Length: 118
Image (tube, rainbow, N blue to C red; front, side, top):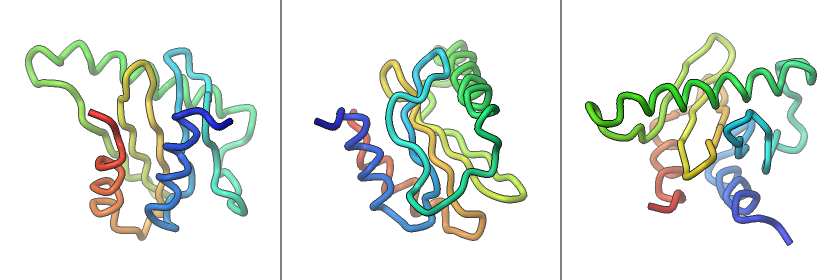
């Protein structure tokens, strides 16, 4: 039976075909649910994925230091030359989503935010 995070990742894929990757990452940088969209190859080598996930987990943890001053992070977005990466802190995990470069990320992010529990 799929976990709640697996179900959420599937719903994120259904939001838009421009979603390349949807995954749930724990605080140690482990992918616990989701992955690449079927039929799409990852841009990073397999051996670098855990390091990438850990980097996002660490950034999320460090951003929480400023929650008292600025409030909680709703999401972050990085636009890179080849794609866009959005991250959404969720309980003890981080939802990581990569989006095709030319996609309208604002619409995709808005739809993803509606899927996330309060």
